[in-house]
Every structure is written in C-alpha cells, then in structure tokens.
Length: 434
Image (tube, rainbow, N blue to C red):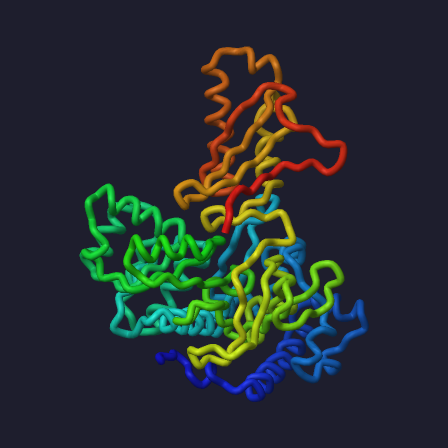
C-alpha cells in the first residue's frame, strides 16, 4: 500500500486526537487575537480561549458561515498581515461579490501536501505525469492540484480547461497517467475522443481525480469504462482550502478526511447539535492549521455522513460519504457555484420588458450539466418581431454568463405562462439524479 505521509494517514486515533487538540487550542488563541469578527462571536457567548482545553471542547465554539465572508468582504477575515498573504483565491457569491480566501506560505504548503496525498491515493508517484484540466486562476481547482503534483515530484501539465482537442493531443503525446478535472469534463473528453477517432488504448491514463461537482457511482462507472481508468472522488471547497480536503482511497468506499488539518463534524441542520458517526447531517469543518484565513466550525451546507470504521487501505482517517444534498439554495453546475439570486439580479436589471417571473431548470444531458431559464416578457415585446425577441435572448444569455461564469439557455415565454404561488415561490427544479 502506498502512502504519501504514512505517519499522519495511519496515525492511531489517540495520537491524532492529541494533535488535533494542540492545534485547536493554538488556533483559538490565534483567531481570538487576530480576527476581530470571530472574537466578537466568542465574546457574545462569554467564551475565552482559555475555556478550550482540547478537541472535545470544539462544540462550545460559535459557528462561521458564508455570511461571515460576505460581511467581511474582501479581507476582513484575514488573520495574518497582508504582507504574509502570498495568494488569494475566490469563488462566486450571491450578489456578484466574490468569496475571498487568503493563504500564507504555510497554508499553500499544507494544501499542496493534501493534494500530494490525494494523488498517491490514486496510485500516482514522482514518476507520474499529471494532466491538470481544472480551471486555473481564482478557482482553486487548477493551482491546488498543480502544486500537489509538483510537491509529489511528478511532471505536471497545466492544461487548464477548454480547447478539448488540444487536451486530447496532450494526453496522448505527453503520456499522462492521471487526469484532474470535473467528472462531466472527463466524459466530454471521452465524447470528443470518439469524434476524433482516438481510442482509450492510445492513452496512458490510469486514474482520474474528479471533483468540484456532484456525481454518482453510475457516472463513475461510465467514466472508468470509457477512459479505461480508475475514477477517484476528491472533495474540497474554496473557503476551507480547495481540492484535497478529503479523497477516495483505492477501496473507493468514502473519502478520507485529512483530519490533521481539517476537523470534521456532523451537526443537525435544524438544532445545530452535534451528531454521531453514521448519522446524516450538515458537514462542518475547522481549519486546524491555517494562518491566512482560518475558519472555526464553518458550516459547509453539504449533507453527508462520517464513519470511523476501519478501512482496508490501512488509513485511520475518518471517511465522508458522497454529499447527498445541501441546506441552502446554491447550485453547483459544471463545477461553478450558482445562486438563483444571481440570476434574478441579472433578469431584473436587464430590460423593462421582462416580467418578474422566471423558472430555472437544471438537468444533466449525456452526463453534462445544463441550465435553462424560462423568463416571462410583457405582451408588447412578445408581439414584436422575432428579431427583437432574439436580440433580448442573446443579451440575457450574455449578461448571465458575465455574472455566473457559465453558459445558460434562456427561453422567453409569454405573460402568465409560469406558475404562481401564494407562498414562497418555487423557482428552481433540479432534475439531475446521482
């Protein structure tokens, strides 16, 4: 069995708990001194750093949510001085403002360590060629896996996303044995290979590390069959660090959480009380070693379960199941966070001929996420020339792409076409099945 850091990955639970306790005590003291927003939360409940003696006291601490990041945009939650922040990443937010995260050099090194561990879990080594087709830039996927591959000592191909024909050429000519991208893009690559007449046997691929969007075991099987690889599930979120918070091992029976750096909890989404192993609830993380923007008891809104049952791979780290759903209205479409409120803000500020009624349908066609937005327009424009409607449709699609970063199909419909509600309006239908 191959490990990147056997000491941590196979540490006995007692020693791991002692490590987590030391780090939590240090973290709380650091945050209390350097993050006024969280100090205020602790002061509000009469909690001092001295009250936290170890990891068993974590439930005493207040939660953090994405609202904290919005309220302190852009750098208000940074706990390190700006001169010590060497990089920022960001993901989309509800109002067009980004969710910003800052990293110190140590944060980047810890993140690279986690991504290196993940690659080794997928069978990679310093002799590997790692093809990174996650997007580079503010999105965490590309640079996260890039630094992990380099830390492992592997040859790293920073392909980023898009230009699929060239991606296939690079995969073939450079002999990559691992592919890092979203699962839907992996299937798109398989589709384009068929069109180009490139057989999977012409590639050297052995494994794929796929994440950033929900996917099912059926989708895993299809990817494995079409690309001739073993497909691994990798989990992360930009607020915590990025990819590499948790990762499938060779058993493919839940993702091991790197608990030395990210302490996981499951809470009841209604009462917010902690739940035990095997119980479904909302996933919460505490970043035990982060300096740039540490988060304490951050509510991810992802619903899953945790297990501490022994794993045949030998790792002692707890495992998390696939994410079953979310407690908020955020949609993850082709790896991008999309909020209905973002779409609404575009529609309501685009043209006076648009009525305040719309309906969003998310689906998965040929393993590719699609999003269609039906929008009511007033009677006058609906009776105008077809050219006027087409121009409005194109304008809306352009404005939506600018806001959410992915292509959406707009369908203009006549007045009073969409359903009305006397209570809370139902504006989203997600037809994807996992």
